Amino acid sequence: MRQKSSEKSKLKIVLVIFLVLTLATYMLFQVWLKVQVRLIVGEIERLNKDAIKLREENNQYQAQVTDLSSYERITQIAQGELGMIFLKQDVLALNK
Image 1 (tube, rainbow, N blue to C red):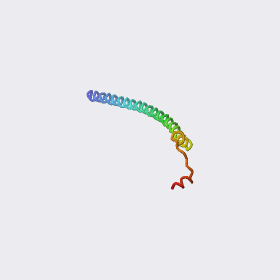
Image 2 (image 1 turned 90 degrees about the horizontal axis):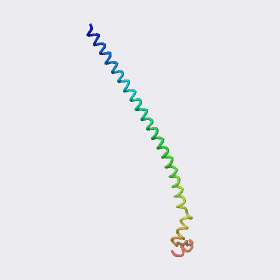
Image 3 (image 1 turned 45 degrees about the vertical axis):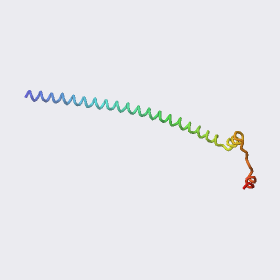
Image 4 (image 1 turned 30 degrees about the vertical axis):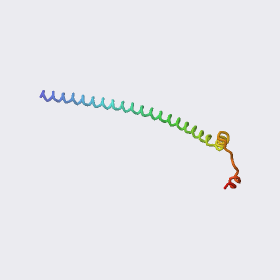
Protein backbone atom coordinates (compact mmCIF):
# COMPACT_ATOMS: atom_id res chain seq x y z
CA MET A 1 0.00 0.00 0.00
CA ARG A 2 2.81 2.38 0.87
CA GLN A 3 4.48 1.70 -2.42
CA LYS A 4 1.33 2.71 -4.33
CA SER A 5 1.03 5.89 -2.26
CA SER A 6 4.69 6.69 -2.88
CA GLU A 7 4.27 6.08 -6.60
CA LYS A 8 1.18 8.30 -6.66
CA SER A 9 2.99 11.14 -4.91
CA LYS A 10 5.95 10.78 -7.33
CA LEU A 11 3.53 10.86 -10.23
CA LYS A 12 1.88 14.00 -8.79
CA ILE A 13 5.30 15.65 -8.39
CA VAL A 14 6.24 14.79 -11.96
CA LEU A 15 2.88 16.08 -13.17
CA VAL A 16 3.28 19.34 -11.23
CA ILE A 17 6.82 19.80 -12.57
CA PHE A 18 5.60 19.14 -16.10
CA LEU A 19 2.76 21.63 -15.65
CA VAL A 20 5.10 24.30 -14.24
CA LEU A 21 7.58 23.79 -17.08
CA THR A 22 4.77 23.96 -19.64
CA LEU A 23 3.44 27.21 -18.15
CA ALA A 24 6.93 28.70 -17.94
CA THR A 25 7.56 27.80 -21.59
CA TYR A 26 4.23 29.34 -22.57
CA MET A 27 5.02 32.55 -20.67
CA LEU A 28 8.46 32.81 -22.28
CA PHE A 29 6.88 32.29 -25.68
CA GLN A 30 4.37 35.08 -24.99
CA VAL A 31 7.17 37.46 -23.95
CA TRP A 32 9.13 36.55 -27.08
CA LEU A 33 6.05 37.23 -29.23
CA LYS A 34 5.54 40.66 -27.65
CA VAL A 35 9.17 41.56 -28.27
CA GLN A 36 8.90 40.46 -31.89
CA VAL A 37 5.71 42.47 -32.39
CA ARG A 38 7.37 45.61 -30.97
CA LEU A 39 10.39 45.11 -33.22
CA ILE A 40 8.16 44.72 -36.27
CA VAL A 41 6.07 47.78 -35.35
CA GLY A 42 9.28 49.80 -35.02
CA GLU A 43 10.45 48.56 -38.41
CA ILE A 44 7.10 49.48 -39.99
CA GLU A 45 7.30 52.99 -38.53
CA ARG A 46 10.85 53.40 -39.85
CA LEU A 47 9.82 52.18 -43.30
CA ASN A 48 6.84 54.55 -43.35
CA LYS A 49 9.16 57.47 -42.55
CA ASP A 50 11.53 56.33 -45.29
CA ALA A 51 8.64 56.08 -47.77
CA ILE A 52 7.52 59.64 -46.96
CA LYS A 53 11.08 60.89 -47.39
CA LEU A 54 11.43 59.09 -50.72
CA ARG A 55 8.12 60.52 -51.98
CA GLU A 56 9.31 64.02 -51.10
CA GLU A 57 12.62 63.43 -52.90
CA ASN A 58 10.76 62.05 -55.90
CA ASN A 59 8.57 65.14 -56.03
CA GLN A 60 11.68 67.34 -55.93
CA TYR A 61 13.27 65.36 -58.76
CA GLN A 62 10.08 65.60 -60.81
CA ALA A 63 10.12 69.38 -60.35
CA GLN A 64 13.78 69.46 -61.44
CA VAL A 65 12.97 67.40 -64.53
CA THR A 66 10.18 69.82 -65.40
CA ASP A 67 12.50 72.81 -64.96
CA LEU A 68 15.41 71.26 -66.86
CA SER A 69 13.28 70.14 -69.79
CA SER A 70 11.41 73.41 -70.25
CA TYR A 71 11.31 74.83 -73.77
CA GLU A 72 12.67 78.18 -72.64
CA ARG A 73 15.73 76.62 -70.97
CA ILE A 74 16.51 74.41 -73.95
CA THR A 75 16.13 77.39 -76.32
CA GLN A 76 18.43 79.50 -74.16
CA ILE A 77 21.13 76.82 -74.10
CA ALA A 78 20.80 76.15 -77.82
CA GLN A 79 21.18 79.80 -78.72
CA GLY A 80 23.58 80.96 -75.99
CA GLU A 81 25.98 78.07 -75.48
CA LEU A 82 25.73 76.23 -78.78
CA GLY A 83 25.24 79.20 -81.08
CA MET A 84 22.21 77.74 -82.82
CA ILE A 85 19.71 79.93 -84.58
CA PHE A 86 16.10 79.43 -85.50
CA LEU A 87 15.17 79.44 -89.13
CA LYS A 88 11.73 80.42 -90.23
CA GLN A 89 9.57 77.81 -91.88
CA ASP A 90 9.63 79.53 -95.27
CA VAL A 91 13.47 79.50 -95.30
CA LEU A 92 13.44 75.79 -94.63
CA ALA A 93 10.90 75.23 -97.44
CA LEU A 94 13.09 77.05 -99.96
CA ASN A 95 16.12 74.87 -99.21
CA LYS A 96 14.30 71.65 -100.13
